[in-house]
Amino acid sequence: MDEVFKALADSSRRRLLDSLNARDGQSLRELCSELDMARQSVSKHLALLEAANLVTTVRRGREKLHYLNAEPVNAIAERWISRYDRERVRALADLKHALENTAMDSNAFVYTTYIKTTPERLWQGLTDPAFTSRYWGLEFATDWKAGSSMVWQQGGADTADPGQVVLESEPYRRLSYTWHTFTPGWAKANGIDDETLAELAAEQRSKVTFEIEDLGGSVKLTVVHDGFEPGSTAREMIQHGWPALLSSLKTLLETGDTLPDPA
Image (tube, rainbow, N blue to C red; front, side, top):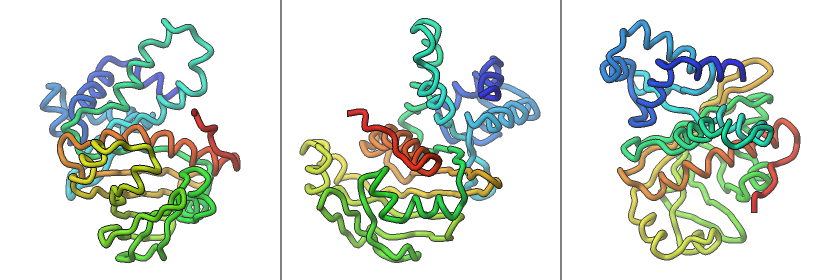
């Protein structure tokens, strides 16, 4: 965690985080222009923020876009927050809230975490029903080949639709698929009211991509969930769900157990 505290100690780096919180997914050029900082300075600060895992990047064509990443602040809050009084951690809690609640004009949700496992084991964690049922509470019926259909199975209810397909499948490196259809059966199983279901069903289908990088002894996992409309209800819901889900996946792969249900 030393890298996180070092990164947050500098006011210029905090300005960069504030800028990304206001408008996520900016290029280096956009950040330099908005903050009126030299390109070399911004690059240096971004490198430190990325090394601390507070910022993660995604390639879009020839550009590299920068996104806030809540994972390290979540980790600090989960491990240490009970050791300090409320006043001393207020600033940390505010930053955690800001990182998890990016502006609504930001389309993509991007989250990076590091897991002490192998690419093969992580791939199994993302695809094998024996794993997904433990930390996610659902299973996928598919052969995990690009173009294949997917059936989401949860609580005895199946969600099937021609639009639910595997988009990319490079074992141990990259996996991408479209998000599930919002059906009445799914809503009932998850306690979603009719009004929210109607909003979700009216939105365009999103997609999620898992990028796996072998670091030798550990794996860097970057999750990119995008394809949302401005003001998307689904976007608001998944930004709170993914951090908890990925924390549980990380715990399962590293310890053999899952996080306790907060309920």
